[in-house]
Length: 249
Image (cartoon, rainbow, N blue to C red; front, side, top):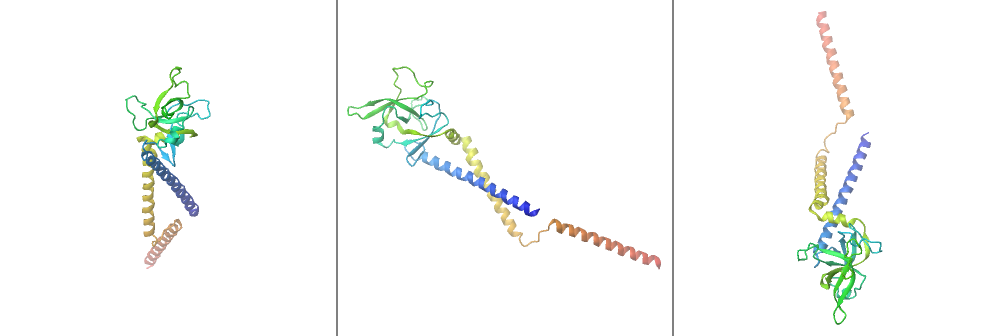
């Protein structure tokens, strides 16, 4: 019975350790992701030249192959510092760019959008000065034929989208980026992890200290009880014998 109990306990300890280390690995990955966001001029996650962006609306949701929807994570090529890549952009390409989303007259950190190029302003040498963009979803885009789209200066272009995406992950990463999400998914697991490790450490230290002491098992307790009863009965018999001898005299 004790062997089975010890085996179960070891299995539980292993499972708990695996889960906790997964949380730690996840926390490290999120930290790397956050560092990647702050290490470039546009404050977007860039790893290995690839730009990882969370989709915040359904403006590009359509039946086209390159479409994506709110909550997706799209992966594009970071081209902000690549003049040749920006020069080679053409109508139909999908780009991520900085834009004043809240209408306060300034472009703040995290204000970006991803739409399809509908027209291009060029200089006398044919080099692009600005791009006009629209979303593919007609429910979001201005349907006025005279409206070319939002005008995006070339200096505001961040990335070019090539069709790679991961469904649903963008929404989760956006939640992680919030104070509540960071606290629940990063801080809390780390606190639990270190708390558990402290518990295991203390338990190990106490176990080492008690190694030289005899551990009393259930069988030992039963034997002690039995001997105590026998000793009690023996003393009672002895007392009875002495009383009988006294009466005979």
